[in-house]
Image 1 (spheres, helix red, strand yellow):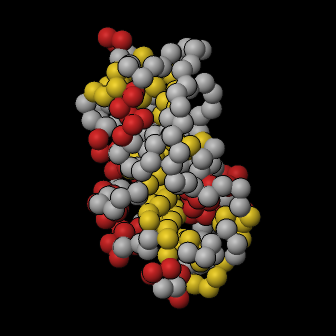
Image 2 (cartoon, one colour):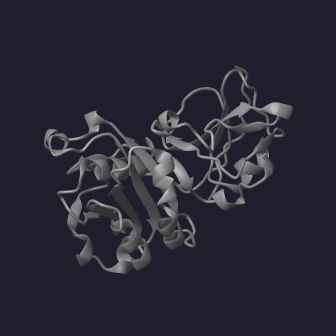
Length: 263
């Protein structure tokens, strides 16, 4: 597979990597009190994790409209789906009937808006809210969140997984765009060709109004493949079969075209 790599432009870090964990949630220093005890002006970032109970990504996306509407106006918002496997669940959760499902994370700067919190709470299950504070401390809303919600928050904080539905610049990805435009105008860090496809900045991507990059190693990666007419399309089909919709990658790795951009 042939690859092209361009200069990496520095950007403010979007994810917290390599941190210790407290109660299963990555922390910068330590958990400090409850979310409701924190002053809004101290909150630099909020991550909500939701166990949806749904088993496939397409079903989850159909019910995300309220959450997207509540959070989409804020700059820097990232909304991801996360695949939860049996091995991610506690034995007692499995015994109670929980199974593989798609969880959701909502990562937004500052404190969560009331609308976003309400939209997240509309899903069945407990919402895990994590606040990253100005002094590098972390505050959590509950120590008894479902494993699915914990996994979503953990992957969102570390950038080790998550399929991005909403991210900086995602609303610009309509119609046809070039690879260079995607890298320059959105939070996507890397575009990777699969199946031996070579990717260059001048290549055209037919977005089909549906591109779903994934987080891997702290970077947002979009996989593309060649389609009719020589254009590129996202590797994920906008209308997948039920089987494919139930499988969401934790994150691709391999040769790619990359450029780091600011939000």
